[in-house]
Length: 384
Image (cartoon, rainbow, N blue to C red; front, side):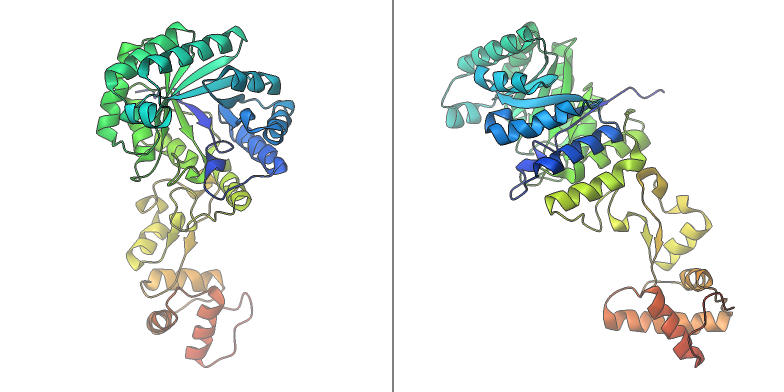
């Protein structure tokens, strides 16, 4: 079966920067936008013009760079917000308004009827300006489903190009997500649906994929999963899951994911966790004897995809859980061929020392242990 096209909407510069304590400079925002564009995302949500002149200047920089990707600005369902977005020259606007009763009553202190009126007026105005329009249902996941369907229907009638389903507080699970999106897609034919999922229960990526299975065409993501609280669906996770699980194809150049992730990590002062899916240092790291032996014989035995697909590198560690295969491979890479007896002796020493220091050992430490066991000076490079 040919997988269908899924469009990637990156909101690192908007929702990602809303991560508590994260601020991107004007130069960093432009650089991230250009890296995203080079990586092949379809749309870049560049920011919120209503925040003022500093934000608008950064957005204008990105627009002036003429990225291939569509540029979108985020707005409340307020005409003045949309006017500021139009002034920045973006290709598209996102119009966001709450749709759950708790948000409508407690936050807006409004009514369902008023929400529909505001959304319709804002959407109609934006379409009159000739831009692409995404209507965002804030807290869609906790909205009454019948009201949400009416909201989507009216958005479509007002000319909206897309509906963004927002799991604003990250309370969805994949099965419930599938049912809700399937219903919305079926009840509003012709309107694209975007998944914008948060990760409060660790299910943002799974929920996004479930939405695609149910008929959604777009997925909102951030690099490294940045975003409010626990963050959003991670760009790198979504793209690779779609690719390798046969759920959809994207235009993203996956070999650029790692350098993109590393730059955003530096700019956000949020280091990539070692165990981070797809781009973490440990994703292609092997120490366990059985795993190393299998990976050395054929990497596919213990790797879901090749490191080169995401700009990564395979790493073999030696430590407490290592076996003879790792010891031999490491030593041979340094020009030393071990006999069986030498290998067994060195492996025993490695396991003891790694417990003492509570970590894997470096190549230089491994060589020191070898020289200590053999009672010789360190071999020169290439000595056999």
